[in-house]
Image (cartoon, rainbow over all chains, first blue to last red; front, side):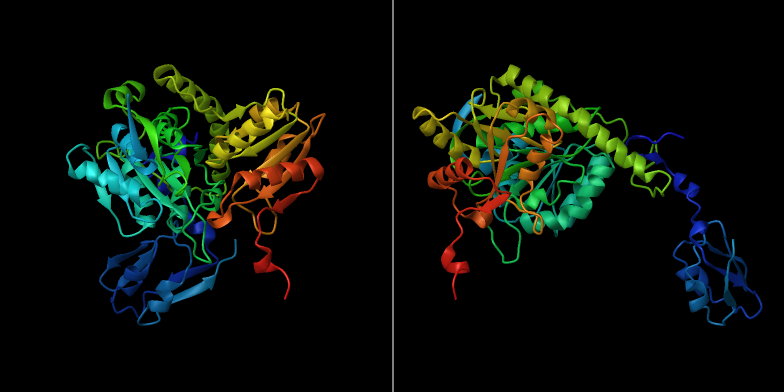
Length: 86
Length: 391
């Protein structure tokens, strides 16, 4: 791929930036005590938490940077940050 | 063409007007205010059709022209000093996105202490931002440069923003007879702006997306390479302007009585006028002395400067800015021109005129005598000993 003038790109091409490479800690969504408050989804700065069903949320590990905000905000301590060794 | 006795700021505003900018963003700050004020009058009187946006800060002023330029609009803004510093984050973005915005930096000192008078510290602070910087010697040149600036910036081989730097008060508030550019003359000189890439819902694009360590360096490489290309374009546009209007204020540099000179004064901006008076006076007494005006500061025309000065024995660089902790800025760039060359002249640096301190004919005589007498890195000229000396 050649860079174009000013690195101007087609819309949506930022998807190619897989920000998971920045991650040191990985959020594990246990999906056991979840009350479905949705705070993890609301606070995720990358917008990569999604609702699977009413009391079940999941995270897209392709873009999750491991910031830990979802685990910090989880109202039922159902998300755990674990060291990720690569 | 029509000659009018007019204030520098108004002349610039009128020239910007005939360039048919689609969007102008405006925030007042002394001594720049008259430019955007007059543009707003032109809009209010129905003489200029443009989207004139009043903003709440200079950061917004720069952001408005960034966004507008990305949609393919021809854009203009102006500022000075503190306002300029507030813009700097956006100025880098404008250059990085390769948007051909044109702005006037009215040169003024930077706080603290607060000082509204002229020096060139503000624009020199952004010398590494990727903007082309051109410095005007007088109001005719400042006015003419704006028409040239759009043509340089929008050249498909350039696509970089251009900053016209003009000395605050010394130029902006001075009245001079100016040959104003008429609408049909401007239209003949400056073709409509047709960028290769612009934002439109029909073809969605991303400007300024994240680029990681795998691609960022190449974006800098491209701008640096384009700066080299723009050396040619700046000269060509000045020549085009000469052809159509008969006026030539230099391309990348301008020289005055340099051909047989043994001592040359190097400077940027309005101080050149005073230098010319002194040079004429000393030439009449037989001293071989000349002037080199750096008109394009970025890109820096190393080869042109070397060609013009390689026969010279002594150079005095006069500058209204300083890199604190290092010294003169321009003087060190002039020195770098001679690095590795067979002959190096004596190059003395002079810091003067900071915060609006007058640069008089006597000041220049002092500089010349010092240069003939001694060799040194740089000197402050015209310091008030009562303020710094003794106990």
